Image 1 (cartoon, one colour):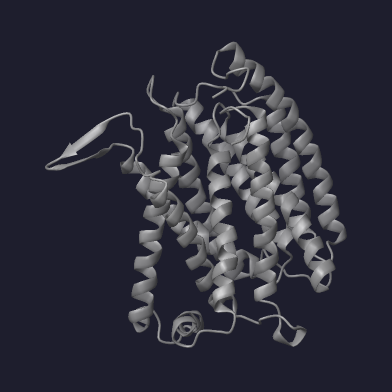
Image 2: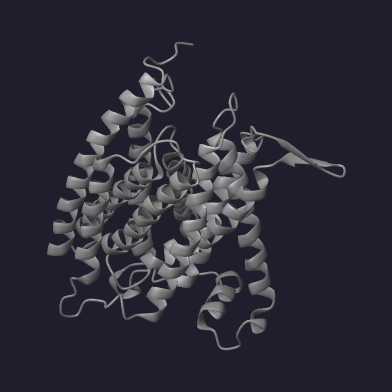
Length: 368
């Protein structure tokens, strides 16, 4: 990153800007490609777009980590199993990758529900905020996390959850009833379960670095994404060649199969659109694992950034493509989000001073 040091507020802001920008693109493209053909959109079925966008997302991640050699992980300890040697961290980073393989499709599926981009983001992000606070509580009790969660961080959690509550329970006439939709609850439940294990693992890795061993977030990201891609490709191949093994009457499996055998017009551009979500993954992981911060703080920064991106995506789509504008509850939720950001700003100033006092953070960027 330019002219910022690892663990600094400046570096954090840069990551948030990148995350925000590419998530706006992601939010817009999902609605664009799945919009009605009668309104001039490609009119892809959700499953078809998910297939193409997942290809693009995984492809960009794999290309970067392989070309740049990020998979050479800096490890606490090398394990030996017969003729093989590998970092001990593989034992839990690979399971984290399996969880990522669940998070990727469920995230896109949430956007395909008949709710605004803003509402989908609020529901998912609020869930992860709760998970992050839960993980901190567990790891403090396990003596893995040595830092305390500031009062301001806890207050920010409360306001973030209020923002989520506004959108989840404020159901007007004709609105989608999320709570009583079996597909919606199933998608969200899978997303929450996978993210719970993933956030715990990311913070376990971050908080258990041995003295002198660098926090190698790029290495973690590389191994996790390679594992996720292997799972997605394996499951995708099985589903394609043996669809009747799972269900002979599944509309989703039929659409998935036809995405390859009868490719829709615009399939290449849908794959290209998926690369934006892949780029989001880089910024997302690096924020989650940001040096010297609690899971609560990092989770809030990550999720609140995407929530603001949700409002922006909804506005842009409304202006450019004549979509629906954010509703009253969306704006009210945004107010609570901004209040949460204010408390996070206070917490960040306190944490920076703490890190400097402990000499865990340099005060000036290195000049090369």
